Image (cartoon, rainbow, N blue to C red):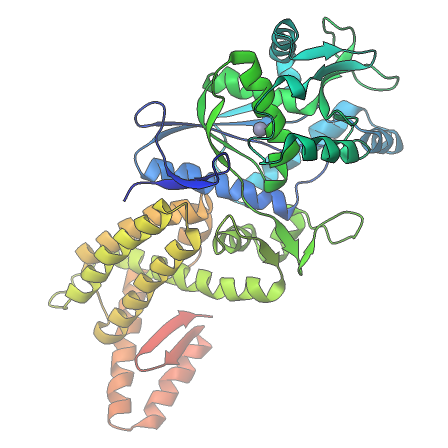
Length: 479
Ligand SMILES: [Zn+2]
Ligand SMILES: [Zn+2]
């Protein structure tokens, strides 16, 4: 199958055709670093990490560029800075560091380019000058604004009609200071107000509007037209609509071929908000559940569906995570060594082949991670069945399976595959083989209805932290 993805621009599932063969240019919007990132942000960042890793799995070279909005200034932030008795710069530095720490907790690879808005003021002012020269922007006493009525395609991405947009923008003006009044024209540059940090520009002291940074930086590092632009669903309007308008107005070229927008994370069915107090930071969630579980939890729902963040669903996902983790460790211990021979492995190898194909089909179908995980669990089930029946596996077959589990594990678990899945205490190969032997002996005792012996073995193993599960076949797990 070929990779298809859902494009917000056309509201269609489309075959991914990169501009340059074998290369994907990718710009997901990064954080505004004036607070800790929350579990909604973490969902989108985790998804981008999976997109990047799966594109690489599929043979693409990926350039992932992501911004850090280190100039978002509003009254609340200025108040916070004043209260804390620190400088604006100190606040921004603190939360920028926190952002990178949180990324590590989720096993996210570093973007290929991390661009700070404050280091690209020059590119932004150049872009604004271009828009002024072409007649798409105008200067007022408090800033420079983009004239949306000049851009015929305005509303194309969000699918809003210009009339609704005007009404919508009019309502937004109070909450979003980057939106200006009823006309829906948005700020490209805000002129300086007392007490605010500022930069120099052709229009005097001031600071850029929010949207212009992503246009300026994405085009700088990926070209005037690039493959994929992403952001949370709440970025479609106004942020991405405005980015598209100002970029295409400036260059006269198509800005982005594919726009992707993961859905929201709800808290027990409700939208998260600071005022409701149901706002969870990534660091708190990772503390409570582990970054690994948090990451895996997100991937168990398709990215275009809402996720409800609740303890019950997280626990259900944890069981899946444990099953995969155990299978990976078990297969790994058998993959390099051992002299097991004469075990029938055809069924297992057939399952591997089928699961490999089904995994790719699921991921190629608009990154259906939840289905892809179901496929992996089918393989895990077959592995467990195999061990229950045969108590061993040849190193060659184990190696093949491990190779697949590792490739897919690095997609699902990112950098945590190494540190959390592989490196955690497990059994070595000899212990595993001895344990399988013990289970085999116990099976024989049970067949002879010698339940004293089989219970004795079960209890002794339990004392050593090994739990036996007697279904139709006996499997084991570590406590
Ligand atoms: Zn953007
Ligand atoms: Zn952005």
